[in-house]
Length: 233
Length: 233
DNA sequence: GGATGCTTAGCGAGCGATCAGTAAACCACG
DNA sequence: CGTGGTTTACTGATCGCTCGCTAAGCATCC
Image 1 (cartoon, rainbow over the protein chains, first blue to last red):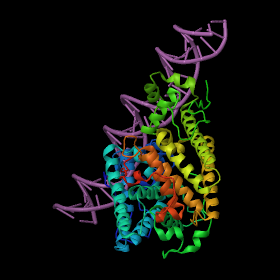
Image 2: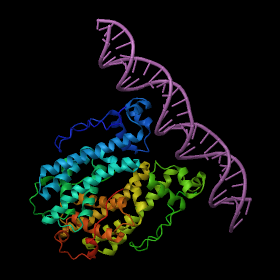
Image 3: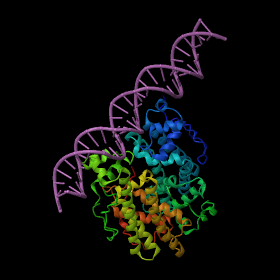
Image 4: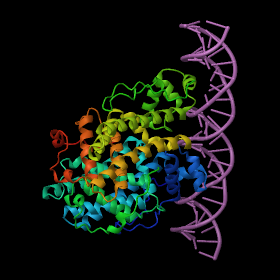
């Protein structure tokens, strides 16, 4: 009778760029897929049980209720992005530009490699108040980390946006949006999408080198000339 | 027994910056509010009827079924943005920079003034295939309009992004995101939010004047120095 | 007298959740 | 090694309730 997160997901000490198999409990895995396809309220516990190949009470043996499935999935997800983002920031050191690029890259990589988990962000509205509060607090913390970096960069003149808080929220929104349209069998790899969004984000926060084209960013440029996929959702 | 959109919403010839009362049928109005608060699948027809103050069959007299309520709302919404965006583009004339700014402004104004309608965009997944296809086609058309403008600007050198399609998708994503966090009683007015997002969008598509600060944009700058609201959702 | 705009009453299906029971694995004790 | 008790992971059956939706009828108005 474990209501615990059961986070076999990632050892957390691992590198922020590496993505192994999900390692979720089969019930959580199939709940995740059902919620992705039909939404939380559009999915019945019978459907989840059916996907797993067990009867309904088996679900209730492992998780308190339907809500606990969503809450566990979302909490697992946000904690994983946060860990990876922190690791990327730490690796980048003190330079605001490098930190910003690393954080955005790590977030977008998460959105692509853990798309089905990341997409559940659209279901926070279905969380009960306490669960939602915990999730939102972690997401706000991520936003705050990024904002601190942008403001540090602004102080050094590497970011010129006069509205850093709005810029950061916009950057996170566009990164989160990747989970809505990315297709693994599409024209761009996860890494290319991440690279492009680092570039776009730099424009959004007003990094002078980005816009004029003459920058020293460690980006492999060839992929930036290929055409982008359409959004469909 | 009308399944028709019943778009009393806006005369469409009116100016794209002016927002009167919604003018939706009471049933649509209350359905919109319920869908906003609990999502499509989380809302029952009984709840909608209760909000309106009638019995359930009264709903079915006016609309074919629950799905028609959502489809009508979403179609009304996307057509309204599209009309306003077209009007803004027409008013701006041929200059890509002016067109881009006008289109982004009109879209963000819609997200703030018609927030409850715009927020329903998160419910497209609950649309049946044909309804979704029609909605997505209109949204794609909007995206295409913006992309054409950005590419025209690129040809003139006013936009420098090497990935215009990704930039446009990101811009629209961040604009759509406004419907998630904007609060009419918050620190910023709709017009200020629109102005800020024009600025952010210019950075995203790589408009040189924006990032370096020395631009001739017709933006009232004072509001850009005030602090931004937090996201909560 | 026929639209229009509702109501009362209720259909069958499915919902989330629970109860009692069970088969198998595990483990300590003699 | 064997045996009895405990734990783990389920199943079958069913609870009370709500779901989307509809048939039939009634009042109001032109």
